[in-house]
Image 1 (tube, rainbow, N blue to C red):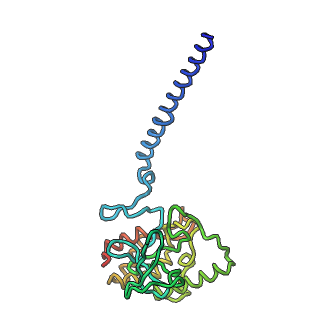
Image 2 (cartoon, one colour):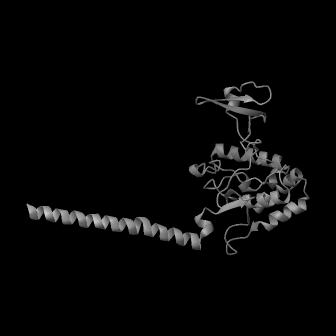
Image 3 (cartoon, one colour):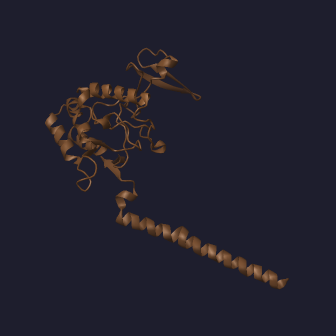
Length: 247
């Protein structure tokens, strides 16, 4: 009995030592080594390719984001389907909306159309099926012949054309369709160019200067043959705001 007990204790202690050694090596030393290597060799990528402006982190060069109208506190402004601004109320989990002017409450049908609106002072990204939510990355899964999708594209094309004061024929495909991830940070150069006059007007700038910003922030095809010319919207908007801050 004493021998069996002694054997069990030795096996237990050997297993314990193995757990402790492997924990130190694989649970502490290895992660620290990989973290140090990543910080030293790939600092920008390891930290999420963060982009800073005015000393503050404003986003990532790899993840798209919206540029919608916000209030003085930075909260998104909401509008009904007719473009009238509304205020959201949350009463113990029950969300209601009232008009900013007049205070009348919206009907259920009107509240169904409440959404944000793009800020005309900024270059706008392509649509996102996930509203640029990193926790809900994905596509709409609509097929190209889906009637809902076809109508959605038509509606978007009309909205984009009116917003930028161009003809619908000038609206490029990426301005009305979402990327597969819903988080694409780039738009085509054609998409950026149709926004130049609108942004220049809002910022009181010469359109030629705004177009030069687009040219300067246009990335060519990968290794000269893959993909199309593209523009990182966040980086372009930072350069734009450095040229003429939004008022």
